[in-house]
Image (cartoon, rainbow, N blue to C red; front, side, top):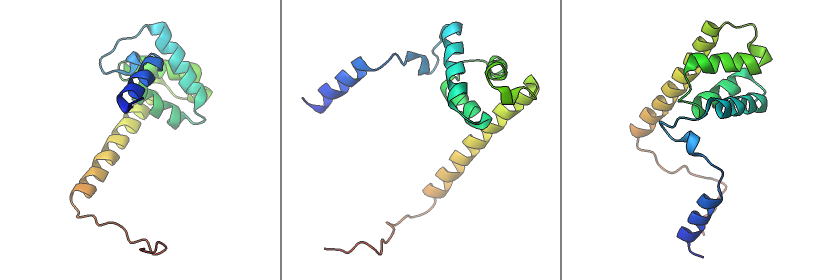
Length: 121
């Protein structure tokens, strides 16, 4: 089987991931079930919020904040406004860090690291 055939087979056997596509609109009940699952998977509030922001960009943030409060006991002490602030911090911090790394990688001539433990043969 060729590489293209294997890729086509993998895609046809993959679960429905259309909800992850940019601009997709999913049924609220299905989105809520996914949000609950993500909240349950991550041991930290940061991890849950980070994953939800990445996987549910089409869900309005106030709705996402309310859902996080519903499914995460460690979010009980925070208001919706607090949760929106946390979401903004996670989103902006990740974007700024990503762009900073890109800037540093673009601006330098990177040479292959010398690996002293590898002998040339």
